[in-house]
Amino acid sequence: MMPDAILKGKAFKFGGSISTDHIIPGRYAHLRSDLPELAKHVMEDADPTFVEKVKSGDFIVAGKNFGLGSSREHAALVIKMAGVSAILAKSVARIFFRNAINQGLPTLICDTDKIDAGDKLEVNLTRGIITDLTKDVQLTFGKIPKVMLDILNEGGLIPYITKHGDFEL
Image 1 (cartoon, helix red, strand yellow):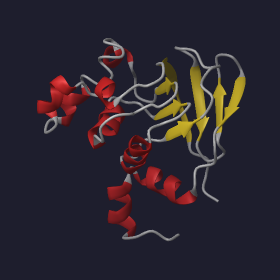
Image 2 (cartoon, one colour):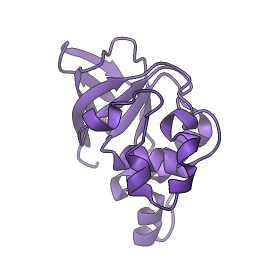
Image 3 (cartoon, one colour):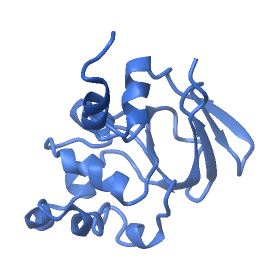
């Protein structure tokens, strides 16, 4: 059994239907070859001050259908580059979910209604428990399969494949 993977940070709350265009606005498409510069604009259309406020380890907390829209691998990557340690949402677009895991960004499906903006959270990836330290409330999310935890622990699919060569399912 692997040790518990614990993440701690502050909640940044967004509504439902946050698209990849909200995450990385199309007007910045020319920055796709300059990801650090693109990361300076992450979530800009949903919250223009997000990148100024987010700190390493913080969380994006959202409603339903996070990441809908076109498949942009860099959407998940620039969220991670901005310092976000995980996304918590009621539901996530399938292609975004896969891209996020491939980029090493935990994306957790859970009921986010009880989490408010600014709440301090602790997420135990191994046990599937979110503790809202501000409210002293625990929430749960579905157990992450071992292979996905292994990918996340390596920082994404490419580092995993580079180190291990293949999956042992």
